[in-house]
Image 1: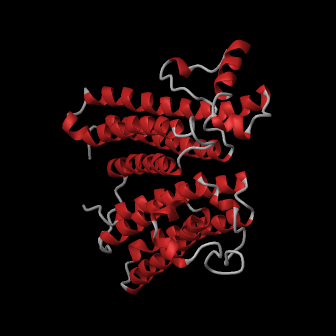
Image 2: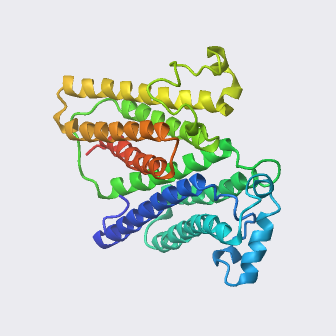
Length: 338
């Protein structure tokens, strides 16, 4: 616990759950920004002046003219009108606005709590704030990759951006659980097991970002086979072991599919051991985790079958927030001691 003062404890809890919800919203909006190809609509990073949206027709024309200078407009969206530009602009602007809101919403209360609690007890929160600041840098670093020689952003930078967002979300939830959750489990499984499960989920998020970044979900729109075979017929198996495989749409989709199978098998292993060992206190949590995992896999299958349509792909990403959050909770249960 960070404090024995109930009032202060409640304030910190409210702050953390609010930040958790805003970060979750930002992940959702970020996913929609990517799915609507809106991420390059704002070509400059103005930390303070960019807080306000365009307020006049001249402002809109200025942003639109800046957008006309990048390859995405010249090679892909050259017929776009100002009204169409406004749609993609608002997605990116809201995404950046939420980023600024998260930064301010975290540091201002943190400074306040620093006067109430020893800073040594708040180092975990300061680390989260560092990640938030670093996330802002990575966000611009990602956008900058699409402003000169290509019509989209680097999927490698996109994956780092998404992974850090989920790390921030996980750490906020972890600290909230440490503060508020008193569910002590006397019988546990080895803490390395839920940790490995969480790492597999994070890895799947990275591969999922690759899928989104190179539009790998728009090919091989069938399941369980990729076309007429288990392995994509436009590659051979040895290609899978080359570094270039992470930039090949069919191989990246193959990785994403099969890592989902591996995660499912690992879950069954954990499920079997919990029930075999009769750890009754973990029955509920492992069952809920299984339901979330099955739902996520089903959404993934539908995302592929329907060619990564925006609404289904967005639901797939929203579901991942619930899955990661419950993985963190499951890990917490197996490390929390009285």
